[in-house]
Image 1 (cartoon, rainbow, N blue to C red):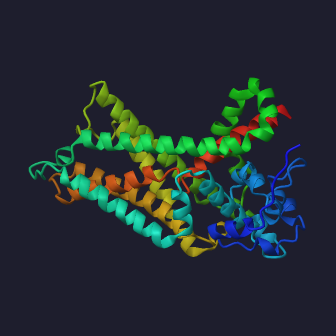
Image 2: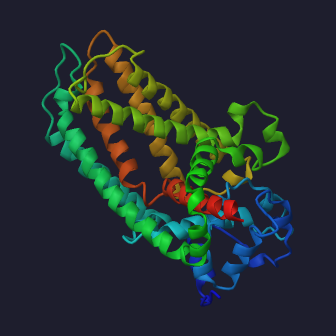
Image 3: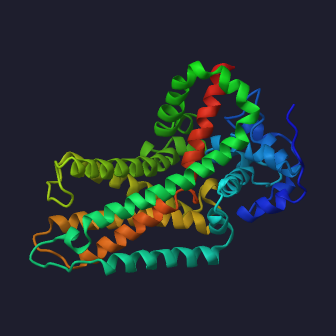
Length: 384
């Protein structure tokens, strides 16, 4: 039998990560009745809300329920006490990310807006000065971006950033596993034969194809009546597909340089496969982040009604990464070399590096934790 220690200060601590009113909840169960994720075995999200009210910290940090929620907003819209259970689930995810992070960066970014701005600005200045100090001049007869900033420098900087992210991410994932594994150890061990099927359902169907988001987690009937490209699931998926596509294009380009097939910076037509992949992925990224930003400004949807500084930083950085990337692509195909492209390269690299470095500590991290939680959930489901 698993036991948990109650912490009377837990709800106060969680409140630092979002504007929630879960104290108003009297556990009526209306949110569970309306939630498409609720089952006979899982009183969702009622159980996790009750755990927070009772101060059961370990129960929250060991839960996969908070990661299964896509924040459709139906529970909040129908709550008779205006306790905002949907926003509570989002806040619980921020709290979990900060709790899993051993470096304390996530906690700062989520709970201290002033320090977050200073930290982001300082990081941008340091990266900009470092890149500028290594510049090799700005040729005007033709655009030579990788003479201005050597390609090896960009690659080495990217590799160093990825090593840091990998180490920080592994520490955080280890912390998550430490919490969620004990009460599921026997179930997971009994499901070893289903690991490949669970992986396909978690990553292929749920993460990449957004199956539950499309079929179950509609905010309201009016959203499902809109064209698919205006629905919330597609906007969410566009950001993910765009990021993964650009990551794949960058990796393939780097691989071709290593095996001496195509040096980085070599001019290629727009229909060149890797360039085309990057262009399409960039369109998805800009499209999804633009609509997400607009909807947060409009606040017409429950899921976008509350936005923290960390939400804005994440979306704006993604949008800027996509836009600056397209400006560089346009500059490459212009008949004359625009001088502004050299400075745009520094801006693009700095934004991309900030996004990469902050993956384990910002909203980006939920993609990692959600994938892990979905995998555990699918293993349990297959073994049921």
